[in-house]
Length: 281
Ligand SMILES: C[S@@+](CC[C@H](N)C(=O)[O-])C[C@H]1O[C@@H](n2cnc3c(N)ncnc32)[C@H](O)[C@@H]1O
Image (tube, rainbow, N blue to C red):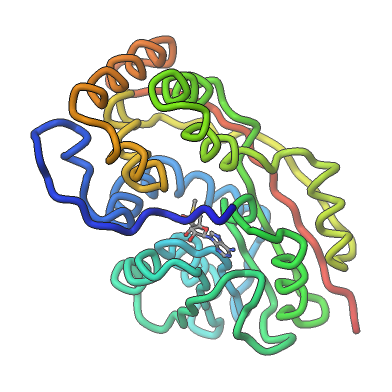
């Protein structure tokens, strides 16, 4: 299954939160997901990557360019940064939200239109779990790395209790199909499986770290619609009438109450950060 952010533009048909977040999916992603969730995860990835000035960095599954932008700061003017993603809407947002000087490539990780040995570091924040062929995506990361280079890849998971609650509401109101996206998001969290993928792709010195990322995110209804409207779940929501959407939202809010803290919702999802190195060829 290929899972990519929904890039359709839907008209505002009501004053509900569903409609409030019904703008372009990449815009939603950049405005809501990036500050609340993406940035803390990307900073966790960068902490392991320890980028050095002058390094040549490729951000794979770059989305709206978050990790690429952080990399620009870290490698400085002597370094170079590129971003790659197969979703045109995400790349368009990456271009407009990022400083000049970053090269952007529209392609899947499994088939990068990039030469061998062209980068010192490949970053991938919260993207690997969506690859149709994960080992092939990692093989491509290894191919574009120079000898001595490293790929640093993070994935979220296992499914945090807050998203179990959201998943339960989706399953109850829409059906099990709707919950498969949530499961896919948090599907790569087993250190043994990650190690196997990296070694299978030919990486040496594979290191796996696991931890958690504490987050304070918007209140449940806002969080839910922001999330839905920047993912393929938007298509599911678009198929519901207004009454069904309202019932779904009420159920989400009720199930998420245990996680509400003042004006925020709190969660501490797990994160896996895998590093694979390329020894001399
Ligand atoms: C959750 S977003 C992460 C974006 C960005 N790395 C960040 O941290 O904000 C997942 C991204 O994976 C991309 N993606 C999905 N399948 C992919 C594939 N096969 N190769 C590369 N990227 C893919 C999507 O287009 C999307 O931009």
